[in-house]
Length: 287
Image 1 (spheres, helix red, strand yellow):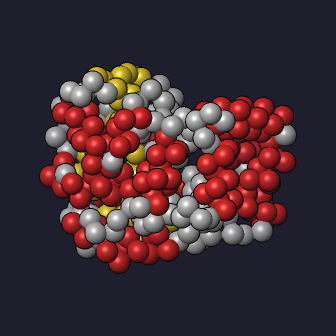
Image 2 (cartoon, helix red, strand yellow):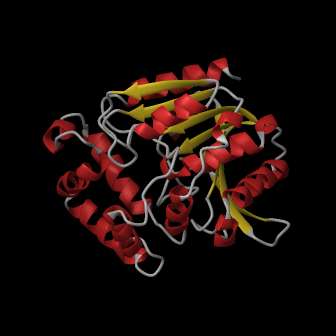
């Protein structure tokens, strides 16, 4: 996918890395955990529909300064400065998975800069507590000192044994039986899964995500005034559906699409086209 990758030095001296793909109505994508400005899930259809996608690497990911992750307010101020630099008065915002708190905070803090907000499999309330086994394991596997080796192993094994590694990882993404999920995947879906494991890195970003999503406050959600689309799978194991339900209950002008899709990675599987149609229809009506 053709895109331009650049860095911007902010007023504080911090660096924000970002990509720009396509031309047209701008969409600001706040990517999920273990990702960066090189994310690809869901981009193809948006580019075909004539949108421009601006994706900053969130704090601690890619080349973006980890210091911008000192708070969600600091991160959102950096995204606003990026918009100012690119002469973007207003954008659609798409917030994905662990990028949910960033999107929710940006929409509540800068309502005059946001056409619409879309939450995709997004964290919308407190996530893993420090007592959770998942939290403790993540702190080991994705710590800045170890994450490179974790992703290197996943990258090698997923290229060599793609179906086996996918089956091993599916229980962390879906509440459905593994064999039932595998029946929904095409060969292209499996190739996209392998490509995801090649580009994933955690840097310092995922540790920042764990801290921010653990203490994320719901108080700002009622201040979100823009139209909001919440897309979530009923079978999501990574970010359970309760996150979507809480966001829908608190955000005034929100629409909840709770889908039968297989799990967390809603861009893969037989229902992916349905999700694309829902998103395009929503963006078209909120332009």
